[in-house]
Image 1 (cartoon, rainbow, N blue to C red):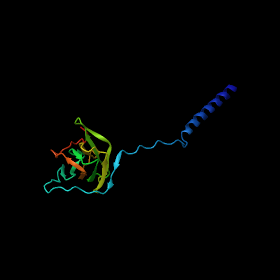
Image 2: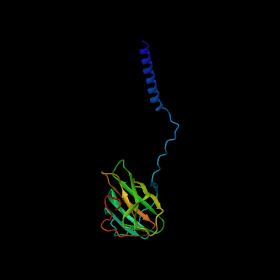
Image 3: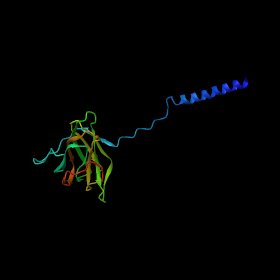
Image 4: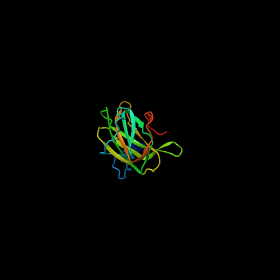
Length: 193
């Protein structure tokens, strides 16, 4: 009988140890939780204004651009992803003002990302240079800084929906020059080359 009591006591102690181990995970931890990684997107703010287009500019085009002074004007109708022609900043920063709408009732966020052409002719994303915008019909503005004067850049618009499309206008200000808009420049993928 002593052996039976010993087995029961051992089983009870083992069960107690297991329960204690399980309950230890349920308590409040005093350890610091790792900080959430800060967003690498630039948050836009309300404000800004559209570009001035010439009278002959087709604002109903699917995607078209026009340069007026130091501003690249962009119009887009029914797109998901598109790239602007290359441009050269006049200084170390540019400002983007954009207004867009969508037919989606829940997906309003879209992005404008900055890409730089390398000396080898390829295009690379400039880390941390994505502007987060809202497609609610209001004007939003944001700036890209740390640009290399004389380098060639382009912007990509990206709207992450397989069902809905984006329409609107964008003004890119602070340019020294921009390439001509050739055959609705930009591909639907919107990525680098």
